[in-house]
Length: 427
Image 1 (tube, rainbow, N blue to C red):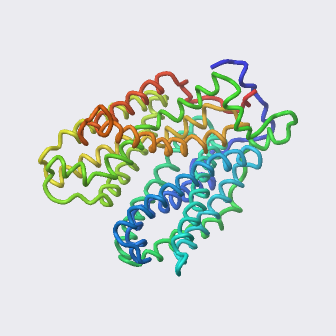
Image 2 (spheres, rainbow, N blue to C red):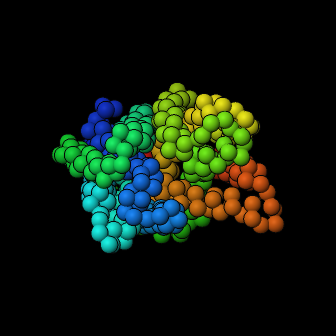
């Protein structure tokens, strides 16, 4: 890393939080739980909600795709906005602002009706995307800055693990409520609003307050990532190390029914159940990767281990010809565990940059990594429909190998950040 791109700053009179389970870790964890609950809930109840609004199967597919794209647009736009605000106004303002926004959007999604219901559905999914974009980055940044460097990996591990379990809860809530999809949204919104009551217990990051009091420090300047070649490469590498997660979740798990059909898997594979199993095991993976990182005192070594597990599980997935339904779901669970390095991924993104742009990085990187799913999907389709003319299974496997290889290279080239002193600013 070039030494002229960062400047140490003093933090006189500010003591790091000693307790691992402090208010910031608890609120960030629960906030991300509701975040993931909503993000996955939409995918789980999309079909039944659109059907109840009077759409036929063809309309459900086309409108559903539009809703997904609108939500993704909200995530990308919101990632930049919340990231900048996090470095300009503070981590807490973004943490609670994002929770408030997606909670209101959740409740509004449950209230849509009438002739303009679809239009309002799209509007509120965009607003939900805006809100969902900010919580994780702000939470991880806050936790990373208030905990001692020896504990921050455990803190971010707790945030990611508790948060991702929200996907499992969303699945079981939707199953329990059946066609009452509106109540599913109300529950998500209510949980978020209840969480805001804990606001009084959380303190702002001392590192942020310290640079806030100093003159001449540019905070939340998104263009700063593009004004220095080394800093830009750091930023890009942070995004690329998250590719395998969204390949597995967005392609292999989301379309598991089609892959299973083409491989002659016995029984009927339910994508909703596959997503639930994947995220349940992903939660365990996050716990494991966070703990192993602390034991090995390294972020990069853990990435290497979990990328290798991802490669093995993906190869097993494409060798699952004629296996039973149980075996196929088990392979999906293994894949979910192997991409359970989300906590490490976001923590690395926060640790790579100075305090004056840390929230911007930690908020935009995960959302841009999610956005990479569009490029991954494009590669998957192009391998089938262009001159390559590969089969569905062949293109799926090659797409995965490319994603894993790129992530491996990015991880090798990125700096180790375990135990790094975060009390500095980007020049």
